[in-house]
Length: 251
Ligand SMILES: [Zn+2]
Image 1 (spheres, protein in one colour):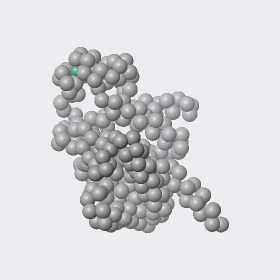
Image 2: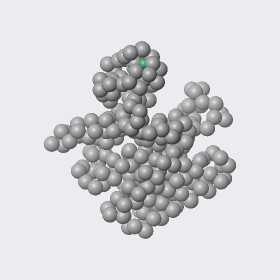
Image 3: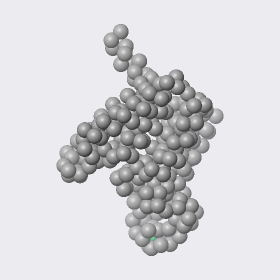
Image 4: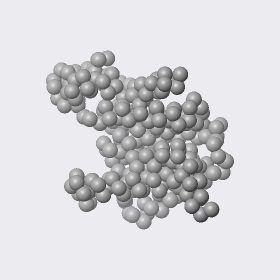
């Protein structure tokens, strides 16, 4: 049964991931996510069912449009595969529970803002405003720590990034601040701190690696949203065990 639901979660994630790609690319451009239907950006041919099977269409067509042979960005199948694997991971971590459902919502928000932040270097307000009432209500109904901790996580997360933004003068956007306030509310105070630490560490490592292989100029900013998202998902699943492990060092 676990395997069956696991496969189902993987497929569900890949299908939704395909939709999240569309949302992440169209919303910052002010376009509707439903209309017009997806087309090849190169030849304009309307995509049919066979072109839109997550991950597999890309593999079958060897990464090219079936009609004009123009190459298709790797980011599409990557976003689909990533969403599928994250959905499977969340199911394996929490089983069939409300915590899994909230985890799936977190993954959805995280995948969309990651794709948007990589493409246009911004976290669209409309995405945050869509998810805000959803996570506020879910946490109010199913808090996994005290509501004070959730509140402190949200306010604290936003404040810390606001101070960092003021100190770095433009290194961080308002989008990052609002996003992390939202994440902090879901995580609660202590896991929010784990998320911040993990996100900064990941950002530092990836930033240094990109510079080492010469893919990134010194002055070129790296979007921070994806690292906040990764840190948040790590803290959402492993935060409590990371904190108790850390505290046991002093016991
Ligand atoms: Zn084409």
